[in-house]
Each structure stands twice: as structure tokens, then as C-alpha cells.
Length: 462
Image 1 (cartoon, one colour):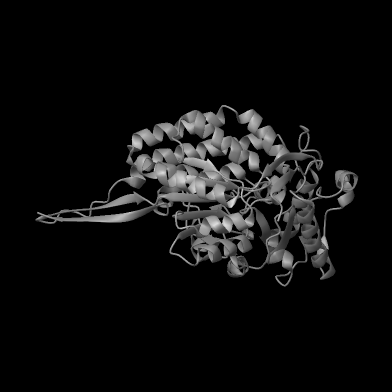
Image 2 (image 1 turned 45 degrees about the vertical axis):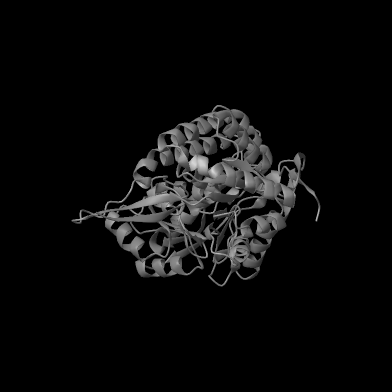
């Protein structure tokens, strides 16, 4: 194993950053600082913590333009879109700060003569946050802000593709005046992460990433009773009902499938369309996809950037080729996107597949790229069956004018979030959670605080 790592930009292969991995001693020292800071941080009033965490958010937002530039360089999202992630970071952070009073308030079970009773929410201690590259600000904030607000201290390990995000967060924490040890980051190898997860000084682990990554975290935590929050993969479906607004459905689902080059855990990867609308939907969908501009994400005209790495692009392309070999039809001519040939991988032309089946990997396993499969369905029952026919369950979207239909179908779907006439979005006042291989635990909303605290009961007899 090497002692350093490089962050290579998908834009042009340039090295954006080179950093040393934290040593075993570095990890021990970081956890000792965190353990030392925890009693003093939890002892601060909620108002004091809120003021410091808000100042941390302010320090991030003050540098939003520079942070957007860095984000484009590290992971390749078009520069026209990256400011939206900083805006989302701010929205989620300020929402979770505002919800803390309600979420952390003691629970009163009611009067009982001769007794005083209450349930309080206690911080866990040291929270280890393992964050991914695809939405590095948004995914990390889901855990960091509520963890700090609840009185926990945080150690952040970010993806090797987006190490500058962790460094900028640490800078913002210092500028905000967070005490030493309350918020730290480490650049750690896989072996280093396993050591941190297994260390008894870590009280909770928040991981966002692949299913295999989640299994690795779970194995590392298996020897002790430490809770893990796991947000893992997705193969999120959309159903276009017979009464759907065709234009609105096409616009929303195309964006949900191809934003961020399809590299979203809750992006749309499979679409089921009522048979009566199928031909018109597919025609309009393909025309909309042809409107994307693939190219250098630093250029203003670019609406579709490269995927994050060459090996990711190779895996995505192999999935498409296997589907076509098994009978699928690819509807988008790659020649319409000359940047793919001129620049080579990881620049990928978007693709729309029809004549797909659930026997194909492209309809079963996470693609995490600019590819979507579309199938016709005959009725509501088939739509529910197809949408549930997956080992994943993060989100599902229903496109209809009938709210009762959306409620009825949504109640049957094996998923953490049900959308109607939108997709690929997180409302920070709602619980963000998955079922099946999409993970366990919860972030955001008042419910998210439950996973970053423990209940303590007070049963006082007079």
C-alpha cells in the first residue's frame, strides 16, 4: 500500500491534489482529541452550539464560488451546476439547525402522581462520517450538522476523489470558532478506515457509498456494539401513469436520470411507462436527451460532463454492451456527442435503452452513469411489481395527476421515499432512508436526530 494518494481530475487527467494517508498514530491522536473535546462540547447549551454551527455554515457559503470551481475540478460536474450543491448544503444545514429544538426536546410521557418522568436525548460521542465523491458537500452535511447540534463531535473521512471538500470544511470549522477536536478530518486508506470503525473510541459511523463499501463497514464494526448508518446504492424507478402530463414527465425524468451524468444514488435508472403513452414518451425522451451538450465541464455551454473515472466509464459501457447483446436497443447515436470520441473515456455519450428486461444487469444493478432503460407496462399492478423487483429501495417516483393514485401505489412500494411528479431530490424536513440493499438508518428531519442520539429515561419517585 502506498503512503499517499492522488486526486486525478476526470476533465483532463490532471492531478488536482496529492495527500499523505493518515498513519495509525494520526488516527489515534485524532480520536483522542475528539474524546477530549466531547464532554465540553456536549456541556454547551443548544443555543451556543447552534450559533457556532451556523457560523460554520456561513464560512462555507462565503466561499461558494471558489468551492464550486474546486468541485468541478475534482469530480467533473458542469460548473453551471456546482453552485447548486453549495446552496443545497446551506439549505440542509440551516434546516437541521432549526429542527434541533424540536428533535432534541425531552419527551414528557404525561403526569403520574408521585413521580417525575421524562425521556431525554443524549449525544453518542464520536461520530465518524465516511462521505462519497458524487455529492460531497450534500451527503456529508446530512450527518455532520445534526451530529454537532446534538452534542456529538465529528471525524470526517472524505473520498479520495474529493479531499479538498474535507479540508475546506475543517477550515470553515476553525473560522467559525469550533473548539479543537470538535470537528476534524482525516485522509485515510481502506485499512485506516477499518481501524477507525473498529476503534472503541468511535461511537457511531455514518457511511454513504456502495453496497460493498457498506458491507466492509459492517464487517469492521461487527466485533463491537457500534451503530452504523448506511446509505448505499440505488436502482430507482419511475412510473409514468396513463394520466401523466407527458411533457412534464419527460422533462423531470430526463433531468432525474442524467443530472450529474447519472451519478446520483437517487437518480432515475429505470422507467416504466403506461403502454398507451409508451411510444410518445420514448420519442420525446430521446429528443430531450439529444439536447445535452457533452464536453469540458468548465465551459458554460456544457450540460453533461465526464463520469468520475475511466474505470467507472468502462463499467457503464460494458453494462450497455451486455444489454444490447442480450436484445436491448440503444436509441441514441454516440456520434451526436463528438466529445466522447474526441476526448475519450471518461467522457460518455448518454444512452437510452428499450426492449430491456429484468434479466439484464442494466435493469437490476446500479449503473451510476448516463444510461436509462425504459419498459412499457400494462397497468398499475404491473408497474408496482416491476418497481419492487429490485434488491434496492431508496426512492421511487410516480408521474400522475391523481394524488390518490400516488398515495395508493406509494403505499405498496418497497422504498424509503415516494415522489409524485418529481424525483432526485431531498427535502431536509423529510426522513432520508433506504430499504433492502439501499441501506439502513436515517438522516435529515427530526427523525434523523434519533439516530445520532440515544434515549435516557428519568423515573424519579418523590
